[in-house]
Length: 77
Image 1 (cartoon, rainbow, N blue to C red):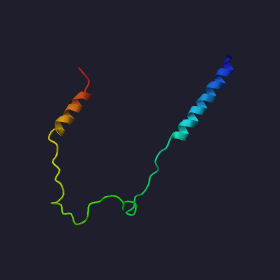
Image 2 (tube, helix red, strand yellow):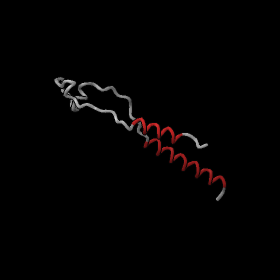
Image 3 (spheres, rainbow, N blue to C red):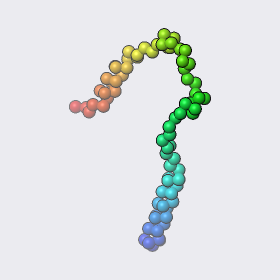
Image 4 (cartoon, rainbow, N blue to C red):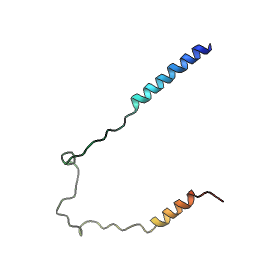
């Protein structure tokens, strides 16, 4: 195969791959949510008092986990 034919074939294949990649790329557009859009979502009723909501206790091992993750990032030596 001649070098010119190989270059042309490589260019055509490269353009085809690029075209397929651009066509497949779907990036979400920024949108603004309104109350009408969120009407079908399940929201808390206004009558719920803070005492009725579930109390969330922090995980006691979170600090230990973060410390261990930080130690794993340090270089040896």
